[in-house]
Image (cartoon, rainbow, N blue to C red; front, side, top):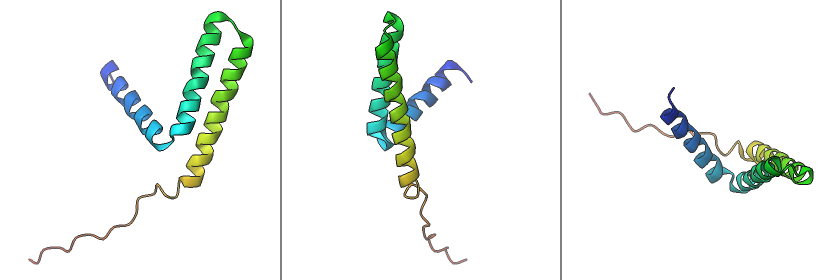
Length: 85
């Protein structure tokens, strides 16, 4: 699997996640940005706040996924009538 395929898969995963669960995805992204800034500047309070924010977003995502998971199941559809032979 080459880098182009990984980029495509990563982009597809992010797009799907942001469309299905927009609020937890934004909160998770904000937490990751806080973690990146804290890691670059060695600011422990920001690192803790970012980690907590990312963890809360993951819990919220799991809760929404469990709660709405039944709605995402494929529905049974009627097959078109077969053509007479």
